[in-house]
Amino acid sequence: MIKLNHLDYYRLPWNLTDNSISWLEPTSKCNLYCEGCYRLNEKDGHKSLEQVKEELDIFQKFRKSDGVSIAGGDPLTHPDVIEIVREVKRRGIKPIINTNGLALTKELLIELKKAGVFGFTFHIDSKQGRPQWKDKNELELNELRQKYADMLAEVGGISCAFNSTVYEDTMQYIPGMVKWAQENIDRVHVMVFILYRAVNNKEFDYFVGPQKIDMGSLVYNEDPPSRADIKAEEIVEILRKEDPNFDPCAYLNGSEKPDSFKWLLTGRLGNKKKIYGYVGKKGIEAVQTFYHLLNDTYLAYAPPKDTRKGRLMLLMGLFDKKIRKTFFNYFKNPLNIFRRLYYQSIMIIQPVDILKDGKMNMCDGCPDITVWNGELVWSCRMEEQVAFGRNVQTLPKNRIMN
Ligand code: SF4
Image 1: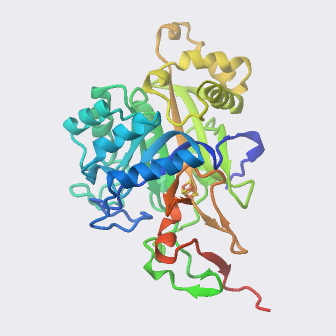
Image 2: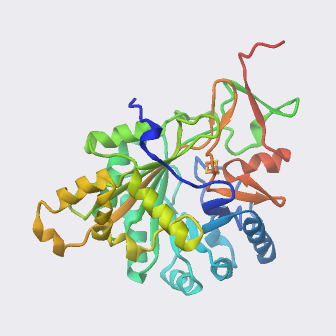
């Protein structure tokens, strides 16, 4: 596996109190069952509008966020989803809906846009048991991704992202999905790959205080059907086989392991036919810094009208080597001055890793933090709060007992 040096990239400035995004869960109810899901699907899992407002108050008491991911469960199953979007927008925060898309109709999309929705992240992958899409692989699912990308483009002005959980047997399809995203670079703004994780009962014991516990009640306790230790660098290696220039620009490190990549961001510039190059660490630093100077928050999702301004971004070639290279590559053909250049993000997320000594390596500056009992907690481990009232600790099975 290739080894990337984290110091070659920009450390995203996100932290506990000042972050690009926060994670609101108005419901735990869902209309699908995804293999890699972290949340128990509860039939009566809707929170009231009052509860949702209280959670937003807690976010705003503890931290600045440019956007709020309205997630779940599936938020479109919530009867008050339009009101929730309106409330987030009213507070000056970008509402981003994280959904499997199943309940989305054009009519609902128009209503959500009127209420102020800023963007959608559609979770689509082959392990969701989707009716009519059973036994389809990730590439065949591009047809479904296309349907949602086109629906959003038709309504206009809404940011469009797709995420997929990545398993050992689906890693091979990532280049095809990234290629599809390029062919739709005018309407798909972000692709996210979330590397599958599950409880590891073979190597570790789990404790709440001194009490050893059974993790059986947790939804992410499963004997992993495949590897649960895929690393972000492996995905970069796969993508470099297709495009040797593929290179990230920014990252979030692990809370316990500074050189691990928990969020790894790549920014690329191109059009439907060609990727001309990548954004470097200085370019992304300039974007985050200037956005913060102007808005007092770090940028979460760029408005679609700005992702079309790739030519303007080329000016950052003055101080960003990779963008400079992109600039010369682009203007090899002078006629390109009349053509549009788009920006697109590719994010790889590597959730909790348990290190050999049992330490849990989390995303340092967790963007997906949520609220539980008035406190901010990691959304990927909220089931531990629900089952045990706190996060569990881990120890390796082969530890030496005193
Ligand atoms: S720590 Fe967990 S909840 Fe937070 S960003 Fe990482 S995977 Fe998401």
